Length: 361
Image 1 (spheres, rainbow, N blue to C red):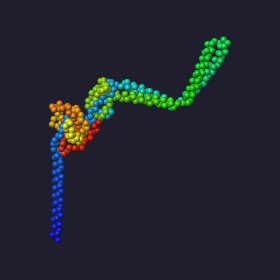
Image 2 (tube, rainbow, N blue to C red):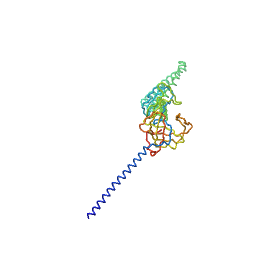
Image 3 (cartoon, rainbow, N blue to C red):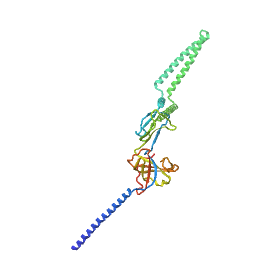
Image 4 (cartoon, rainbow, N blue to C red):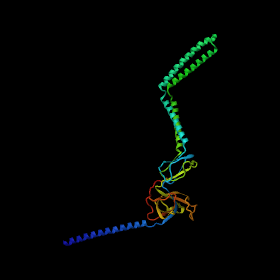
């Protein structure tokens, strides 16, 4: 019996020792695999291709120009100033446009008053006044008729002159015409405004509103605003300088430098080596012995001509290139427009998560 218990205890000890050994073994294997992966990630990767590039803001450079011909009245920003989207950066002389807006608004107010009067119709006081005027016209007509009837027999007997009769006849005709006019005016006021007159008044209001909108649009063109939030990279014009809109005179260059990109030109023989998410190394002659990291953000779908000239021997300007946008790693600060060299890397960590600095317009 004692022998059986000893066997059971010995067997349990062997099982525990075996489990512990397996745990140590598998743990060592897992640590070894992780170390191998880390070593692979840190291993130098051979560049698959190289291309020249230029540093640019994440929003690209926006050249802001004038939409009108004139002279800069105010320049409200300077280089390195931070600006908001739609912020005013310059104002062109616009006294004439302001006067047009004010005139158009006055015409609109007049047309709106006429429409309101047409809709409301005549006031009771106007009708009373028209009735009184008709009564006066009828009284004057009666006086003129009496005078004519008195002069007519006197002129026939020669007691009164023909001239006096002619004057009485003229006063009678004028009195009759005035009475008819007053009667029609009263009838018009009592009838009220016709629908077609109200429609015509509304059309006049719409036309006046269109004139206001046009004048305001012309005024708005004299106010130059920033198309994006960013930094004034360069102020090209100052107050007092003339500008035109054909072609638009550049006033300032603005870009969002909170994120930086490199626009590289990959030679047509190397286009297969650049893919979205690929890691790159970037060097610049201005920063010797330094390397900067980045990730391919976008690969163009169309070949084009070279725009970056390196000045190096063997640089062929007739080659077709493919533009590739690269997001620089966070914290990398380089001057806008700096010429750099981009090296597209291969290796085990070829594709990584693409950073999102903002959409490319």
